[in-house]
Image (cartoon, rainbow over all chains, first blue to last red; front, side):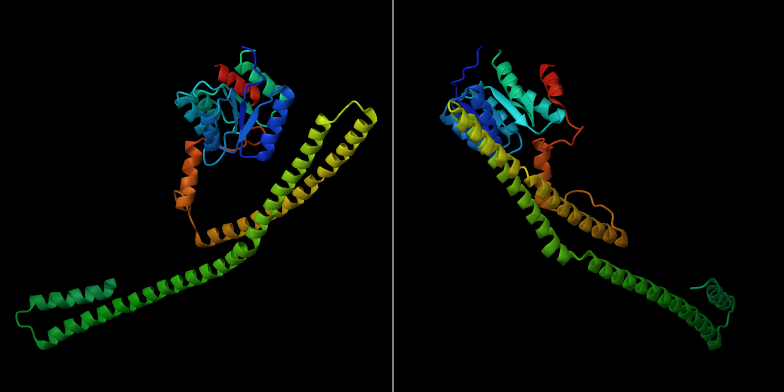
Amino acid sequence: MAVDLSMPVLVVDDYKTMIRIIRNLLKQLGFSDVDDAADGTEALGKMREKKYGLVISDWNMEPMTGYELLKEVRSDEGLARTPFIMVTAESKTENVIAAKKAGVNNYIVKPFNAATLKSKIDAVFGE
Amino acid sequence: MSKKSHAKVRAAADGLRKKDDISLVDVLTLAEASISSMKQFVDSLDSKIYSEFREIAEYIQNTKTEIGHLQANDLRSKHIPEAGGELDAVVSSTEEATTKIMECAEAILEADTSDTDAYQQLVNDKVMIIFEACSFQDLTGQRIAKVVETLEHIETRVCRFAAAIGAEDADGAASEKEAKRKKRKEDLILNGPAKKGEGVSQDDVDALLND
């Protein structure tokens, strides 16, 4: 499946600068419809209002973490199939295993570069 | 009661038991031995209690001195707020610098490249701003050094106090708030960024996901 560059992407991070970095990288990769949310609760609200083709989320946020968001998304029939990439500084094996069990599609360890982001997005969409 | 006085009382009592006819003098002799024995006991008890009270008083005095050395009010009103202020300044200066750098990078990316001279000028200007913005690193280094100094200050005082009173670590959290925070960290696997050399690399993550 080719990556549809016109699909809406939701970036979830409580750090404005990181949102800006990911937005710019996505723009460079050709994505034009990028929204953002500051935590899992806000993201879930936006996901219930608009259908996103991809969610890129941080793990450590308050009140709802990216891990909780992932579990909420996977347990919601209408959202369960949304591709979900975790982009986080949480780099312990237990984090990766928990995210995998919860149904994450890919996992990027911060700090990361544009090539890593591109390769993980491509991998999620089978390119 | 000493062994000697105890034996004296016992001997007087045994003497009375053996007699058929007990006189007032015999009873008084036993009473005298008993009183003498009790007096010795009470005297020794007084001295023991006094000595123990004195030790407790010394301990309280030492603890008060150590509490004074802890300078808790100074820590609370000066050192900790100052350290917090330094960290806030670090956060805002790094954020400010990052924003400046990103604005420059965005301006370069979005610039019109058709006019080569103008584009060259814009790139030069933005690169100069990026260099200037990077000077934040020197200031944040100094601010963080001050915070580390404060932590060492607190560590020295707390360790001295703990050693002076022979404190042992209690189990569990110090407050309900701390217990909640700890539980949230455990439940949601919030380990935070790993130190250099710890944690897994991107290659390790990829391998774990493909297992």
